[in-house]
Length: 96
Image (tube, rainbow, N blue to C red; front, side, top):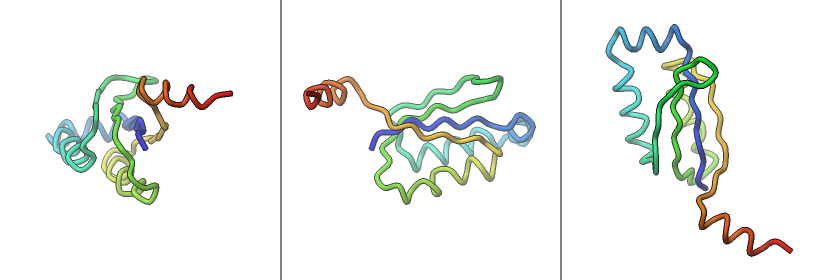
């Protein structure tokens, strides 16, 4: 299932990861295992945030995906099922 993962990083933990020159490595490791369709970075609610679209093959993979963000960055995590336009078209074909 295609999902959008948002990971809002704790400011103090993010600052420390930057000072320790670890933030890029944390993200590189996380993205390497996810093989995302897309990954963007910005601010949401005043926090550094990663927006990552990837294929979640099994719900039992959620801890493996989320824990590095929790443990390394005290991040707030959200998983949202998302569709591309082709998925929307297919789904609308099944409506009424």
